[in-house]
Length: 422
Ligand code: GDP
Ligand code: IMO
Ligand code: MG
Image (cartoon, rainbow, N blue to C red; front, side):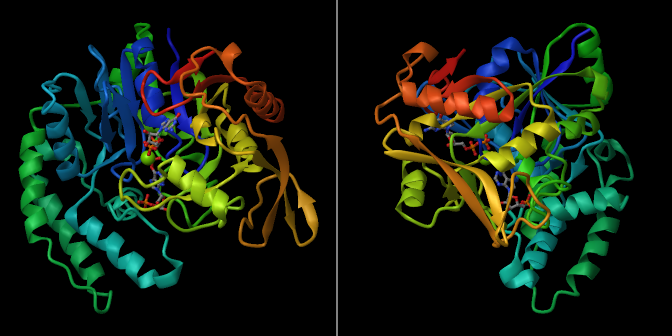
């Protein structure tokens, strides 16, 4: 019997999960998303073309792959249908390649409004949400009020929808000065619901376990990253789901003893979009260079990403809690031109040095840095580890020593082909 492997972001999201899943898919038959929703933006680049996926798993472009949207995901049918149509515009029919869990919750138009109203009310202390309705939808899930994909086929669907919408309307009325009009979006929403009916709505927990039982390789695709996890991220500046390995078990219905490889993916530096603590954030020229060389602008919202040096304290925290078995380092090429590269190896808080990620990860944290000599050459065309400059190998050695985990893959450009597998 097979175990489920997974690709998880170890930082604040946007590590390059989409690209890695696309690269690994030939080794897997099934790719499954287990949490998050259209707050995610996963970029793939191949044949000179770029593509951004929000809800559909990143295995969708590989021939013969099966792509499952698991029970832990929250779905906006409008966004999902737009995505499906843009994939099919490339001449691929995905009707039989995409399976959707009946247990996945639906993001209602009013969930989006609640997200917007809540953020507006927070003012300066806003989370910086993608405003896709993620938080309010997970609130209704845990509050046991949600409407699910499986409900679409029930005669009670419209009723359930309207009951929840009216509840939302009364909540929205509490936000003074917040005005909204969902009529257009609601019409598109029901239109998308109709169109979704051509896809199979499944008991994904049974299907995934059946695949594993029959030795079919399954890869779980994370969204966001460990530092945005609802429990262990920089709360309250987090997303509303468990983005870590444990989320695969609840988000797909796979038992912990059926977990196989845990691929932990990180950028050779660090980024974050939205508000919240980011100890190694740079406000200088180096930060601007990382942003412009790395094209660090959100794939979902277009917002500029905050940039900084690699944070080993946060990385080790994420490696520990995910049980990472192999590391994947992305965007090494972005550092090509830097004379000096820094890595935070500890934090100083009120004059005391610590080497773990603390509860109080706010502005009072000052990173302690170790410096590395940059490689100062173009590595984009390297395809064999031996051909990397020694400075890059030293950087990788250090990361392996600190985390106790092998770095198995190094990405040197956005394209599917720009990758070094050891
Ligand atoms: P995800 O959310 O984890 O899938 O990551 P995103 O797609 O939001 O952000 C990663 C960005 O980096 C995308 O624009 C990718 O095309 C790009 N990218 C991925 N790997 C590399 C790499 O190795 N080098 C460079 N320069 N860009 C990369
Ligand atoms: P991928 O899968 C980066 C951030 C938002 C915000 C916080 C909460 O592409 O890595 P939400 O919309 O979930 O209520 O936003 O989390 N965020 C992400 N940042 N990558 C993502 O996804 C993100 N999804 C949410 O910017 O700070
Ligand atoms: Mg992204």
